[in-house]
Image (cartoon, rainbow, N blue to C red):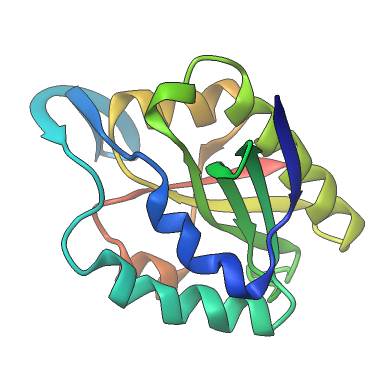
Length: 175
């Protein structure tokens, strides 16, 4: 049975046990402010090399600032995670960034991502946010997921976040 709970700080490294494998056939890109789909085949066989070394300190800092880490477990296996940054951003200081969001490959298509996303929106709203900020990988499945959740393109992406991930599709979701 799949159970959800807040992740503890000493469990953050378990995030890297999520099976991120997937075959991608198409990706989105921006052209004149519009999303365009193009053929772009590749296979992800897990996390990129050194991803854990690069992002674990970022996640630990987020946790220490009061970030929200909600995980889904199947028995003892961490199978999905949503991480909300605690620091408000945006021109109106009304956005919280969905810093990290992943569902393990064997568990996709079961509604777990939607469930996690709704929980993240509820948490962001309880903290006073009006919108979620999402910097999403441009793969077709990822972008379509977020669009189905009510997200749309950012008119003005956050300059710092855009500089960190210029190839990503920067989205926002009203809550």
